Amino acid sequence: MPQSSLLNRQALYLRPDPTRVIVRPFKPSTEPRHLNPRDKTRANEIVDRVLSLDPTATANQLRDILANFDGRHRNLLRQFELRADAMEDAFQHHQQFSQQERQLVGAYFMNEYSFESSALFNPSIVPHPDQSGIADGSTRVIISLRAVGEGHISSLTFRSGVIDRKGAVTIDAPTRLAVLPDIHASDGLAPAGCIGLAFKSESELSERVIFPVTEAQSNGIEDARFVAFDDHGKTIYFATYTAYSGSSIRSELLETRDFLNFTLTPLHGPAARNKGMALFPRRIDGHYAMIARQDSENLFLLYSDDLHHWDEGRLLMKPEFAWQFVQIGNCGSPVEIDEGWLLFTHGVGPMRRYAIGVTLLDKHDPSIILSRTVEPLLQPEPTEREGYVPNVVYSCGAMRHGDLIALPYAVSDTYSNFTTIKISRLLETMRPIGTAL
Image 1 (tube, rainbow, N blue to C red):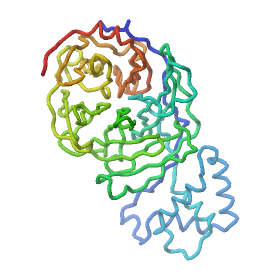
Image 2 (image 1 turned 30 degrees about the vertical axis):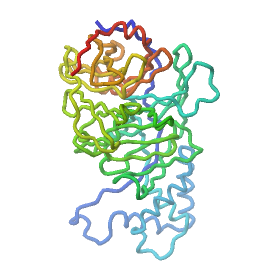
Image 3 (image 1 turned 120 degrees about the vertical axis):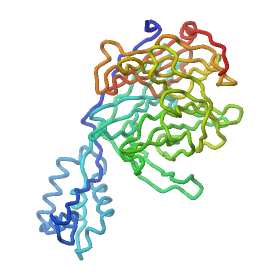
């Protein structure tokens, strides 16, 4: 039977909200040549029609657009202008045009996108870089979430909250607005393929949306596993995630110190061709360490001296219990406690039902398994089994809060919830193994 008595489910239920929208470039489909034999593209034709309007009609159209959309976005006119700047070829047949005409053209080549209309799931949690102004014994946290909208495109969004000294979790309500970052090329010292993202400082954390920006990510930034990494006494927030192009996947790494400025970098090496990589929160014997699933069903322990290159690792765990016979995977980065590393894992069983368990790894040699939960720690409740993908609980990362573990988890690939677990009680229920694999 599941060890549900260990859990303190919070019933917070972070659900997708279709009213939260970003504004994105819109590109009209291209007609076959036999249907449009002229030299102009559809974009050229649309620009021609817009610029044929007289100044009064142009002003009226722009006024109507702002009346309908300006309150839903920050700096909408500026976004129209930036879109027009990216379309200089479409203006090539026109000698003169006003600022209002350029803004109106930009509006015709943008559209709203409800980035979390379908799902808000697969969360991870880390301490917030700003711990000022909260009560003693409390921790301000950042929760990352995978948001899914039209076309099943996944992006990354955030929430903030507080865990109090008794383990009660409160989540701050998200702002109504949502924004995309400015994109800039990396400098010559950055790894190949690295891109930089920068949000305006006036944006709230919950406004910030990291949407796919490269071809490799075009169909999704999926399942970010955030970890607060101790880099010689300084904290860097890393997240491994899956970039999905629509036909292929690869693992990539996100880095930030302030959740305003981010770098996104492809990972290389044989281990990076699969998904579900999770970085340890500090070096082990001077090496970076990762838990990953190099094949389709087992977990491996990897070491590397290069954060961006990962060769194949050492087999750590295979499916052993009935609730995980199909496959196992990690539920985020290992959590360090006095007794070792707590590695939360998901297992897939009959009827493709997902459940979550936990394994304790040796602190000095994580290839040694000390103990594990034989039965699931967390599995779908009767009230939590319906959704886009039924019968699934899934997490991308837990954190320690005093003598508790805070574990956010997704419900049926649709929404997210939280539970806390007392560490001492959890350890009491785990079966000792003591075997080095």
